[in-house]
Image (cartoon, rainbow over all chains, first blue to last red; front, side):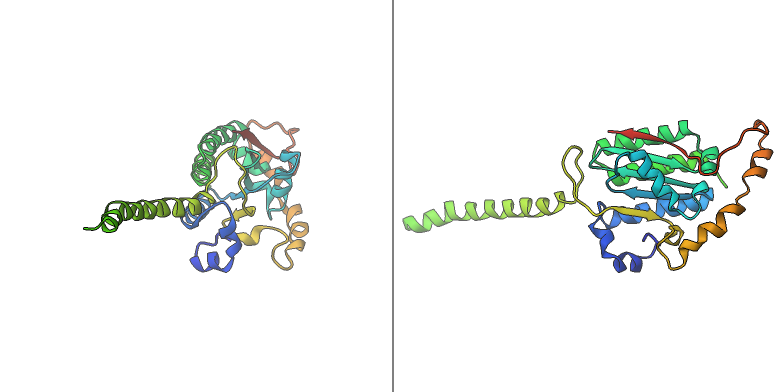
Length: 134
Length: 105
């Protein structure tokens, strides 16, 4: 849904019912594409409610990706006010849990100020920086 | 000027201007604030899931469900571990083991 061209965005009007407006969607799209291209890992962002246990739900989402071992998912639940970062086995070697926690901390700080898109973009940037080049 | 003209000019016009400003301010901000997230207030939206390449989500595309069975056994977990200098031979990263972090605000 964030394939990078505007036609895709208009193809799926459901995306615009989501928490982000068009400029924010474009920023997220660019951040995700850059993250994937520069690290070789698969980055994914989920924004929506998480079922209890939230960690288990986030891991289930992570498993649904085609290559979960090298995938990183950032799951944000604005209503429950919590976020989960799940890294696969390969991705975890490049992004240690401590670095993920640091990114989670900066994301939570931005979310606490009400800035969802900015927090996600900043957190992704931090994770990408930690993962380094592929 | 008659009394009614005076009233129209000095009371009617200011009231119209004030009403116009109110309409502009609250008409636009009410529309915008419905999209805005404020911590602690209920925020209704449809859940979204972003990927740089949407076809990488299993179960979305036709035939994508066959992918993991054909794909996963070929993952070179062993050789990768052997290359790591500080990894003892017995250290087994269980396939599917995940890391990460959680936080709340």
